Image (tube, rainbow, N blue to C red; front, side, top):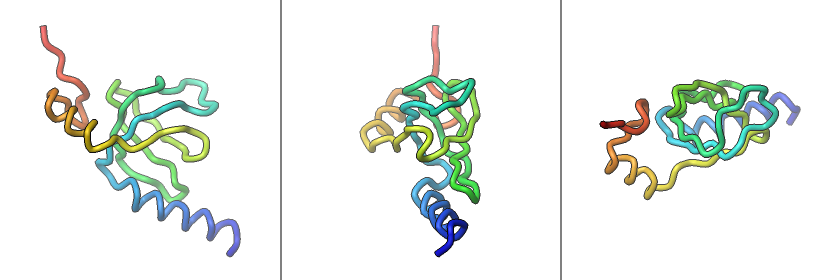
Length: 98
C-alpha cells in the first residue's frame, strides 16, 4: 500500500467514526496561529478526503480539526445527556438567560 492509499483509508475510518452531527471536545490545537480555545465543544459537519474534521464550535468558530496535530475526543453519553438536560443544542451551544 502506498502513502496515498494509506491516507485515503485513514480518512475513510475518520468519516465512519465521526459522521456529521458527532459532538466532540477540542482538548488542544496544534500549531494553529489562531486556535479554538481548549475544552471547547463542537459539532462535526464533514470529514474531508484527507481526514480533516470540519467543525462548528459552540463559541461560534468554525475550523478544521486535524487528527494527529490537534487533540480532541468524542463527548461521552453522559456529556451528551447533560447537554440535552441543560438546554444546549448542537448548533447553538448553551442557552443564555437573564
